[in-house]
Length: 97
Ligand SMILES: [Zn+2]
Image (cartoon, rainbow, N blue to C red):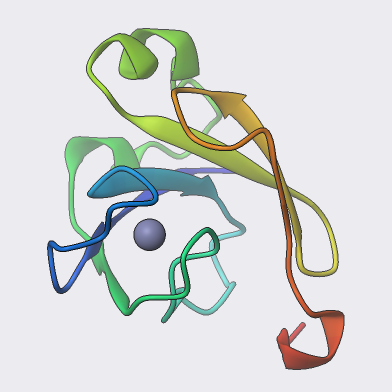
């Protein structure tokens, strides 16, 4: 699954990195809110998002200050690499599957 890069629409998020990556299925709806702080985010088009297979190097990206989370359950995100929180647990009722 590709890694999609997101950025905060308002760059005043103090809880997490301005930009972050999320492993998502191609047909999965883009996130509207940061899974970490809940602020509005938008998906940004980058060279990372066009890879078809999982060739993204999360550790290399982490060295550039890029945090990557992988969805591990309904509303649950597990960090692969980077400086953000290790685990994000959202409200499962608020997550559209
Ligand atoms: Zn955030």
